[in-house]
Image 1 (tube, rainbow, N blue to C red):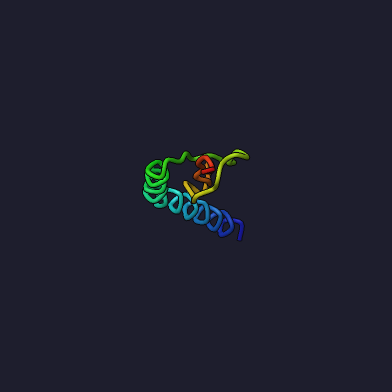
Image 2 (image 1 turned 90 degrees about the horizontal axis):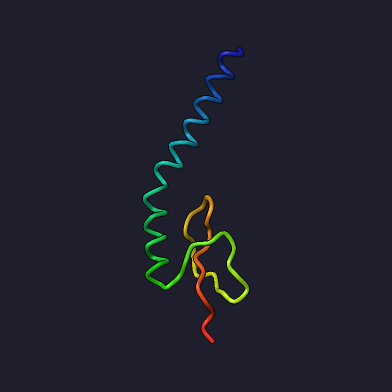
Length: 69
């Protein structure tokens, strides 16, 4: 029984790792799209910026650009 639990957790960790690897190309495309919209990728947008989309799910989830006035 303990061997089965170790195998389960190893397979679960491998699935998470594969999900991170295969989502990388899409996040790069989102970053390029954010730069084309004159934005930047940040964890938090500043008070004078608008959230205009997403960059990545991991560390920099928001695409921010200055509010138009």
